[in-house]
Length: 120
Image 1 (cartoon, rainbow, N blue to C red):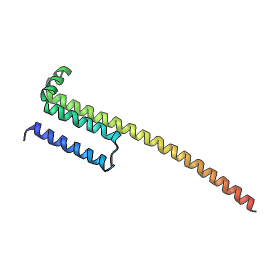
Image 2 (image 1 turned 135 degrees about the horizontal axis):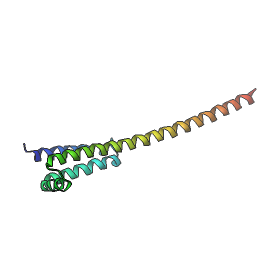
Image 3 (image 1 turned 180 degrees about the vertical axis):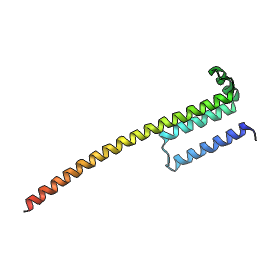
Image 4 (image 1 turned 30 degrees about the vertical axis):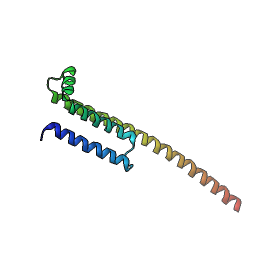
């Protein structure tokens, strides 16, 4: 099998998987957008393979394969950044929920205490 064919098949598989995850609501479109964009770029650059060579030459890479590995590294770094942002957002939400719960718990105990004092 030629590398071009293999790349197209694997990219199509990933693209279909991401679309299926969106459809089943296992992944939000917000996070799937990066995957969909990446898959689209890979498909375009695989079909127009002269473009990747031109981009590699423009970026100063002697070998196109080195440029592709560089792009993969950038891709991994980008997704790590996205996941870090997501984790920070979740931590902030968790902290806010914990504070709100503590306030409600404090108010409930205060009301129970006031109620038991009036009962005597």
